[in-house]
Length: 500
Image (tube, rainbow, N blue to C red; front, top):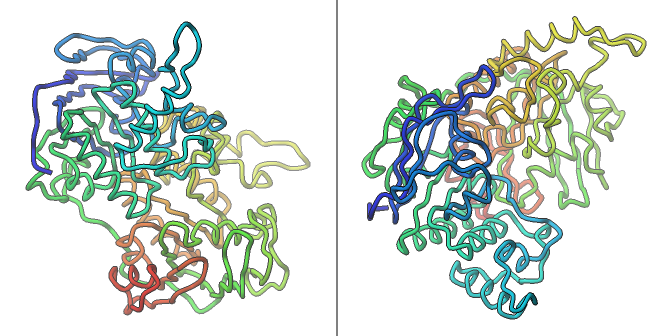
């Protein structure tokens, strides 16, 4: 986008915030103008989430200055922030699942006359604002039935009905398909042209540079640079984020062995999979790529025993005994890092210690008695190995950054060892530095003979990491490609149901 910035709407200067002994922000500056898309990037733990929470009124700053239209503000609640014209759309939609689209959009701005709600008037207003976003979502649909892209549009519609001046989007495309991303960017361009200020937070640097006017980089709680997006290279942004020159680190040597770890034959499920057949060898990275709805996550869940299999079978290490349940899968040496780590991979209100030690209690207990010392030592060693950044092992896991939460989920399966680890989009919502650590860990694991089943929505990741790739299309395997046959173009064509 070319710059069309107007007057300065938001000024953040020298913002600081600490949680216990952890400095989340130590000197953050941000200046956003009306009529611009301003990207904020940084590694996990750089302070992005804390900055957003302060602007949203979800937490208070320790020091520093925030000015909105040159007027100092110090929000003490979400309501105060919203009344000032700031709307935040978090990665996980903030809708009331049981309410309809119309009810969610008008929540807090219901129209009434003499105390009686004017339902027809508010429905017209909702229909009009959704139409302006290019959406014809049925107003009576309950929020729980909406897709990710639809939930985002409903939240944007609510922001517009609230007459917001500043829209903050936190990882807005993490769970969207390519067409949905294009539509969202078109919507943002129209809002920007109408004079709205937009803060865009994403780990996808190429996307950030394409959609934004300016970009601010945070590192270790500090603002290290603000640049015009036009003409800035991805490598420059990455270098600013991590404080050193960096390239994507992918394994270049195959560690695949001859012995088969996993056999899947003619697998079918009620979730849309049919006729899935493949093998996975020790030390091999088998990539799985497909478009949204192709069956990637469904395949991971079926192998792990989380979804029932209606036909076919899954065998581990040549055993003819079916797995069937997650408990049996874990006992057999399978670990799953799910796509939705916050919902399916973590106990958010429990500690790092409890989360990382939850999969294999037999490693530190006997006859039902827990050896607390042994448990602590196992987790402490794994946390050091993975570089988990936390105030202590007793810190609640929901307080960690996305990348550190992902390390906790990984650590759970590495304690005690897993012969097969299923990674379902392991780097979504994870910064460049944490991605590299995950890539190195995959290489380290395969060197030791661990088999990796890698589901990913990032083509570069699939091509860079995999020994072979299964391409899924509508619940079936469209093709299996060896490394010499892989290219992003061929994989994408197959995923769309075309010939390579």
